[in-house]
Image 1 (cartoon, rainbow, N blue to C red):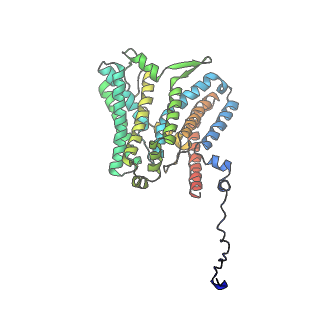
Image 2 (spheres, rainbow, N blue to C red):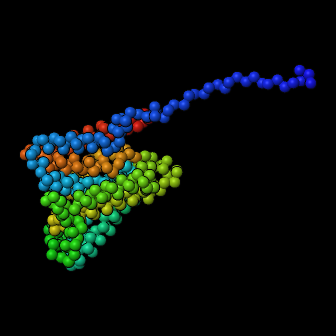
Length: 358
């Protein structure tokens, strides 16, 4: 075979080196910044600061009984702040949550007393009414496309008038009748308003319910499909609908969860005090929303946690009682509420801008 006929091995140049792969760890943000971007970290640090402040400023604050009172105050706010926070993560508001608590309590009391029935019948009827109010709010928001702020503002005004008018019509007074001697009262009180003792200090059962609901809400948000739906509809409901998320179902059930929270807190108030004032509840919705916002829930939806509102409610409990224990004018509580809400809004703005830069 001639030399020219032999196959000449091709001389290939080494392949051009592509872009070098970076170690993924090098692209991560510093640990401190990642922690600060968590929705609950900021309010946790704030709660620690408030605790240290009142621990130093008010000697009474250091006692076990004082802490039990703080936890009780926090739990009555926190139980409602949890579903309000979930609703905010889903991109909606509910301004009727405060008066809905009273509507629930009034319903249970009047059904039981005026119809002379076991109080558990009133409790069940109140649950149905509360869930129906939440379903109505959610249905109206989805049906009309109007902002939930306007829909629930109308519900707030309507329930406020109904609470007063129906209570006067049925009982002849602005308060319901005492139901403490009715059948089933003791059993219901054991569920909603009993106490337990730890180390010689008496705590309200609402503290256990509060922490239990917080653990359940955290599991739902982080470990279930419904939690993913909640974040999705709050972030962008059109995109969520495009990938198969049941937007209408998710939003309506989130409003119904607020109704469930209103029912539970209403039952606690009824069985803790035996009677209900029909004009109460106005303004409480702002406390619930503020606890959720301070807890890291963005006003625009799609971001937040269930743990953050727990610390937010705890801050409210510490401040409302700490001011009293320190011997200050309790009017400062409202001023502190405004400062906390403004500060939380600015922090939420920073978090949203940081997320957009990722």
